[in-house]
Image (spheres, rainbow, N blue to C red):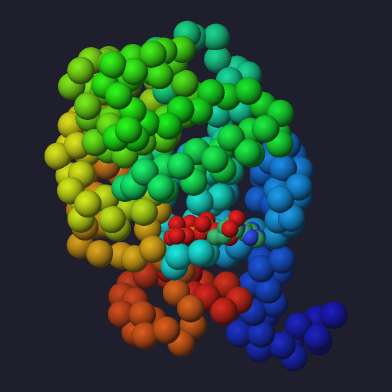
Length: 267
Ligand SMILES: Nc1ncnc2c1ncn2[C@@H]1O[C@H](COP(=O)(O)OP(=O)(O)OP(=O)(O)O)[C@@H](O)[C@H]1O
């Protein structure tokens, strides 16, 4: 055995270790068995590279910035651990909450609908009752109070709808401070260019310090950096870049790189 190891160069050993990491299953990432069964029903059996890295970090409670191209599976990378945390909270907490525990902020009504449908479908497959509400610019101002009564566990919304709720005191800031435990900014690269900066600034002073913040983006831009500074606390930043991409050349020399199959992961 030792001679075999001696014959392998350090690089080969590292690649073998990395290949083992590539084979990690959802179970090995620490995912709840109800979520794993739900994924199987959706024909999903193996995590994508961004999911392999982001899910354990989010379950650990870290603030995470994840940048990976469109279609790489970023939605499940945050939805699965978010649901797992809320499953645990809903079975352990006895304190009556006064506002949603999680906000998922997205730039468009279409994305809001997609995320909402995905959440409803996962919850149905898991047979867990968490209340999910979607707010869009179509939600009439007079309906906001009724929609948020309860209150829901998860709110999917554009930043504009949240800031309207704050200004109309439908979402009292004290309630946000008491209840909010996870905040997600999805498609973060579009949030500022779609004109939501003031809406986000209306929310950020009320995000409690203990709230875990996750930022998902297809690209890294000056806007994403700005949002990162505005909302996150000392986050872990993950960047998935395909080997051979020109982007490899701009990876700063002071960041650690891990090869994940045909991707570089920069932490
Ligand atoms: N582990 C997986 N195995 C197979 N398919 C997956 C897996 N995770 C997600 N998918 C599917 O891959 C597709 C793209 O995923 P998703 O929409 O999350 O990508 P994304 O990175 O969020 O893209 P965007 O930047 O557009 O938001 C979806 O249809 C999703 O159901």
